[in-house]
Amino acid sequence: MAKKPVKYFVVDAFTESAFKGNPAAVCLLEEEKEDSWMQGVATEFNLSETCYLTPIAESERSDISLNRFRLRWFTPATEVSGINDGEGASEDGLFIELDFPADTVTEFNSADISQISAALNDAPIIDIKRTTVGDHLLVELASGKDVVELQPDIGAIAKCPGGGILVSGTAPPESGFDYYCRTFFPKVGINEDPITGSAQCALAPYWAKKMGKCDLSVYAASPRGGVVHVHFDDQSKRILMRGKAVTVMNGCVMI
Image 1 (cartoon, helix red, strand yellow):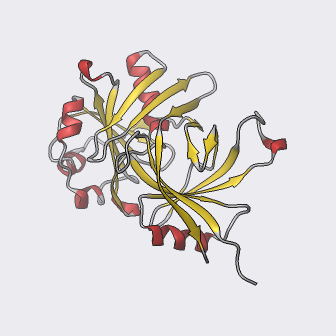
Image 2: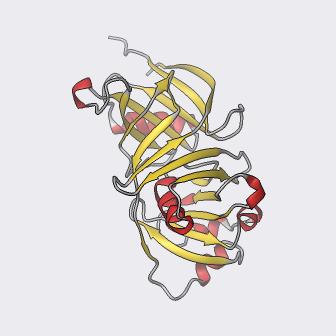
């Protein structure tokens, strides 16, 4: 019996323009597939992320007016753990709003930051934390300008502690943003992610505390750029991310 084709979209997320933001493949599943199949398809797409959405029954939804999905994310090399469900409005595979648990950060317990400093080409480091999810390094630089101008050594980042490095800095007042960020995950095959929505689960609480505000506008200063608006609920420890997206192609996986 021939297998039923799986519908997919390639979506540029957190942007209003095609070929900007974060390109991701979104596959709509009727039921869970084998891990090996999902990894194989993600490797074939060869995008930073391939997302698999499996519908959650109405009886399990907090609001039946919203489409709710179980999410699994794969890079070309491996599955990204830590985020496995989300709720929000969707249309043709596009989320315009995502609701995720906040990530907590802990102190980076090392007096020697020379390895990290060298990997970031001696950029001015203000603070370093570690995330709970993914064990990433959260690195604050002196300014958003330093984030934009950063020229990291990707090979050296791959040898640093933790999963990846989330770099951020205070945005210039005239920019209309609260902080700039860039994210690097060479250990899982992503040298620089154009914009990482899940990184805001750690970055938003960090910056909300520093700035004394719960609503934050974020600019991803990667070459493709990207914009995400984040609300951090300190009581529920949830992150609400909003952003626009553009579908650039669609089709079917035939295997």
